[in-house]
Image (cartoon, rainbow, N blue to C red; front, side, top):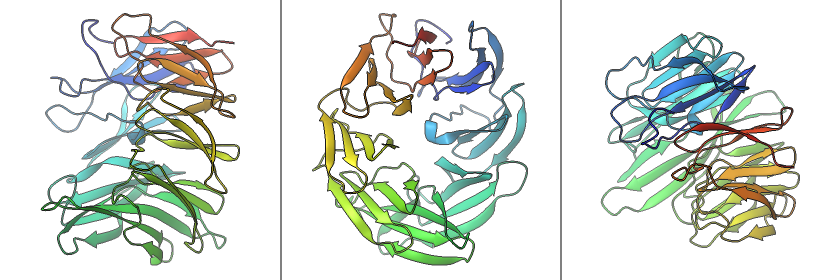
Length: 360
């Protein structure tokens, strides 16, 4: 990636036409994150980008801050947002957001960001803003202020289109009392079209904490991850349909739907599938990996990395394949992308960016 005597982190790779787009950075390094494009057949460099509008060291650092839209890559660097042409590596637009939070979300042609005023990551006030993915200006959507001694912080919303074609936003307000370190989470459903609150769930999670991932929406249901529990609600009514408790085990990875199951990876290493209609456990694979990279499903196989790269059958949780990096100091703690047609896996091992033949 840069220097084979150093380790680097990368965003999740994106396939664009004949190229792969990714990045490299060091969390405490002395240079800004560099985005790059490689030819996916031979790995030759096509372009690099680090055209940040702020001085000093800048990072994007995450899958929940990177999106592709047509030929543009949308990247969030807390205070800044960028659109990068994936063909040329040139900046399409860049905006500066004072007090911007780390994460964003995107729905069709809308990009959502959050701002928190005060001591990051919590503050006296927090709000959601939105802009077109193409050219356009940021607009305020919804804002709340600190209540009592609890500092506030919105996470970006998931979007649901109602039967009347209204745009509903579902998002959380993570809060903390900085004197006692007591936490709590409120969940909102806000009608952006009508500028009205549909429902509100105060102090919603059992632990007071939560997973920072954007809620997952399928049909009329929303799935939300607390720190220790996983919850399903009916969106139009706000009724809680079921809740599964992991009993003091952190849930920090992403979660995804496969057929009738929701698959999650707990920080202790348990890979679990939950029935999306009942909340009951379908299968468990214990202590497989520990806290992992993004879970990804391609062609009925589940892929994720830790020190090793794992391939699992998502229907039953059984391990199909696992392997180490061919580099003695490599580690697969970055997300994977699979090209099913070419039968290839693309992944960084924190030292090299590599292409593997897809196992049968």
